[in-house]
Image 1 (spheres, helix red, strand yellow):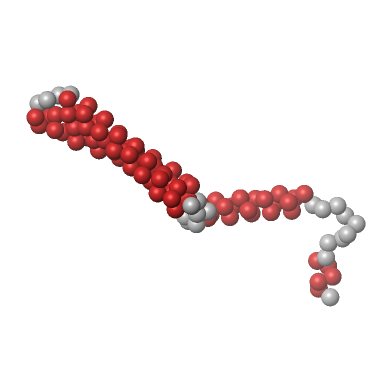
Image 2 (spheres, helix red, strand yellow):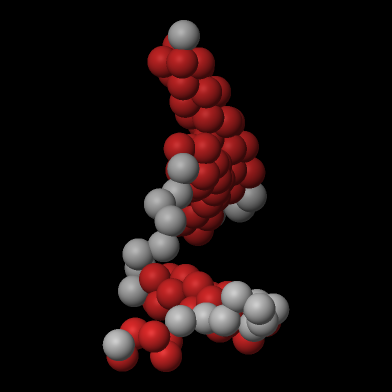
Amino acid sequence: MADEGLQQDDGLPPDPRLDSLEQRVADAQQREAARLGRGPAPDANEQLGQKVLATLIGGLLGGTLIGWVLDRLLGTWPMLFITLMVLGTASGFWSIIKMSNAKAKKDR
């Protein structure tokens, strides 16, 4: 008997406020999941892209930093700085090529 008062009248149009409420609840759930770190897991392509970027930046910055330190210690500015910066960049690209070849072989 108590359920009779809770039924929606079929003669009335749907209430747009309910659609708005459902959208707001979904948005709030997404924000809460992102806040707690339970968002959608990154896919393999995104992970590979981040790995490629980190490898390239790491090679460049690593070679540059080592070259700068050695130049300061040995007083050979800018010879080792430039040389190791180029070698670090080349090693970063070489690592990226190896990663892409390994992925291509795995996909076959």
